[in-house]
Image (cartoon, rainbow over all chains, first blue to last red):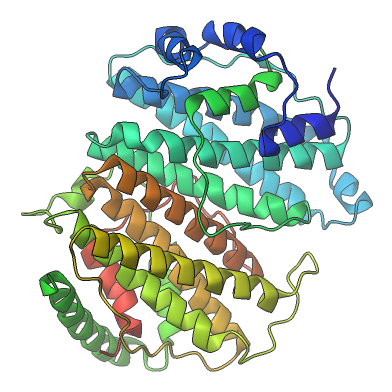
Length: 215
Length: 221
């Protein structure tokens, strides 16, 4: 069992101690055939790719399911829990709003996959590992950071799909807004660099993998 | 090729004149800043944006024109922070951090965006647009921050609306790495101006024409 610090550092600093091969095998089973094919190529150390636009959208949907499930945990904390660690209770309202956005992203991406004739990935079961509100906020920041980087890395695969690209970017921006706010809440820099670093699919799955129990 | 930039500036100046005269007619003393903020923050979220982009012709002929469009907005943002940060005491954000310090970082980011886009346009054989002269109309710390928020929110909408016109994957990824930072800035500036850092579940992609109506208010020549 990793500590929360190990998990969040793993997400942000890519220092996960999880066995890579084991992780890849586990993740290859999720997200349907598109993911499996992508993983196979990642194992060959070739650039990660997607077979079709619907695979990119399902990849985004996989991440949105993780975020959406995570923010359902907001309800487990009371406004007084926020005040107890020095925040105004309004911070909880912001987190609730973020959760509503993630649900909207799940709904929109699910609809898009169906429109494309695909099979939308469904929510899995997750273990976010936080034990208190401060850890919850750290995981939130880490998840949002990965979300931004994932969209940033995958957008190029939608270059021939103008509407899908634009739709993905309108989600990407909101994830970046969440990430900025959550960095502030955690006392870190809301915009630590002038350019957002995109992550490949393999990097994203490695970072998100420790939270996924099953899909 | 400066053609598009010149056309853009011409439109900007015309649009600015039109907006100012209309505002005088309709609203008397309504501030430029409030107008820009309202334009950039209201309206329905839309994920299906096809109707907004049902134009007779593509607004950009090639990637260089898209990048010069982005560069035009980055110049605007950079000049705003370069000339304005330090003019007013901006105080602390709701989490106790010095706002001016944060905005110096934002300024440096915009400078990096300007430099990168200028270099890329040059590498592609284009002529990078240069800085124009601007009038941001702020008079105090509050209107300065409101203008900053309007510029950042507008920047996000502009990139989201223009990205689809890029043909090169590498350039698309680069543009994505900039727009995410603009969205991070927008979130922070919304927060310090007392509005929702993430007012909707989806950004609003805007057409170049829509952007010019907003950004044009700030461009003098």
